[in-house]
Length: 415
Image 1: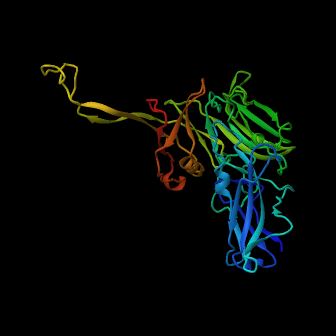
Image 2: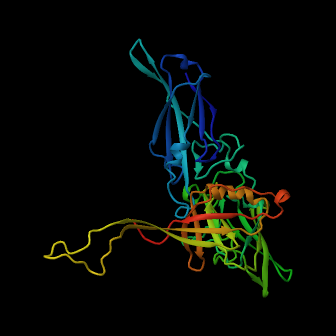
Image 3: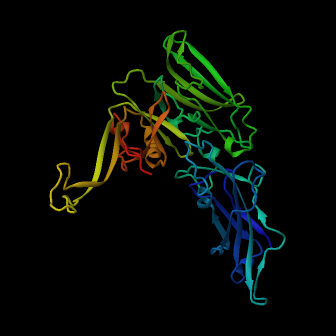
């Protein structure tokens, strides 16, 4: 009696979407009374060898086809509790091993698999898989691995579908490390990047090229080093985007990830020089668990609201020999006063490709307003807009959107 593996996840899997293992007992022992498939699930951080003991045990009765289907995404995702702002490589290793047991009336006990449990091997040859704090999209099939389903890999963003608009002073630093564009640089993975190159164009027609070598990162097998963030904005002090060349201002640039001499993917940027309104720079966690940046260039409104509850206190000198009251006493007293602050932003005219990107903003669970780029100061946001009618260039010509956010730190500090 032995376990066969019918389905297993991709080597790099999103933890918020299904992570499925399907197993079958090939000699049909599952027809026995009270047959159950068993699983041990290991989840850990650090290096590949730090798995320790299993974290969860699971049991499954066979389905009508005799298979046992295990979805471990909820278990793995529950361990990815860090904010992206504090952990820019929120990755977990995991592995699973399977067996079975069934009850026999002859001995009034359970018979378990003999010869040890069956571990699952991933395509890279090891027994451990990797999961990141993100989700897959329809219509990707179950267990789609990261680098086979995403056209802009190894960039962990879908911003490659549009030309991004930035200002020459923009930064992509939240104050605790550069978190501009993220790349997957995990070891043992296919076509990992070895170089990031920037090609910058200037008003006088000149072109400047610079690069960052990643050769020292690709050998890492530690989860905290599976992603690499670099300064993708012109204002990043540690970035690779010179804002001037021979006195001429930057007009546009592109970032390219290379594996050797092969271009893996490209991101394009254009400089927005004139802004009538003060832009609002919003940072949000995308479907890869990494940050994307977006500038709202049109008018924004910052509204401050209060909510109060009142009670009617007893006024007067009731403990004295006569009754009187002081002029500072009131018959209406506030006992709960809270504040909310709403930030309403308007986009500039956008490319139609931003429609899919705004969907990720609407479902993001981690959003910030980078309101002071010089000092890297942010305010957490919760998106207030829960419905957006997406426009197209064919039907609507010009595309603009209004998005409202609740500011998570409005005024009063209450713990």
